[in-house]
Image (tube, rainbow, N blue to C red; front, side, top):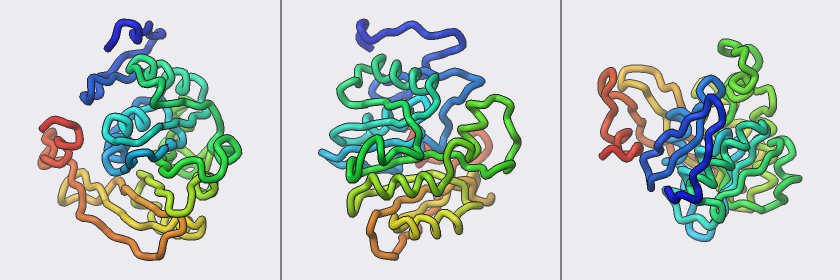
Length: 250
């Protein structure tokens, strides 16, 4: 990292090595740190040369940073409503010298189309809150609770705004939970973002899936490819080769 990009961390923050291109990210344990779902989504989404990508609810900026590292896209933007997380994301962008490649905007997903305009981005990614209402345990930490529960935006908000922002044939990538798949697929189609590709993620080969990766196409025809399952662990504490490749370990 260049000396001019080195920054002071605020109390409680740490720098984590992303193990790609020497990039690091500022995180704050006890607030919200990225997980495997963000890493898998960054590997699943594709941003082609000259395309611009928008990450909705970017948190501390993990997806724009990983997408920039893995793709040849022209530019990346993250939208985040929580000011502290957005500030951490901006400082991570500066720390990695990516100011010309990544913008972090503080704003509400529910107003995203008004902020960015119609057809502004060819690609949208989102790692949204998975839980509705009281699903799951309520966390007293407001930042964590908002990241995991649909309190600041809903799936309907995300799909409505994405459909407005994406041009015809624009691509939408999302990671979510399989228990909401019927709702997700129905609402994507209703919003005009046709599900085109789906991959279920299993913690172990003999367990139920706990994540789903989905690609949608605005204005696409109703035909979807269900891809081979992605298995995370061969055995406890031992990742499969595909996961190791995604993490850049092999």
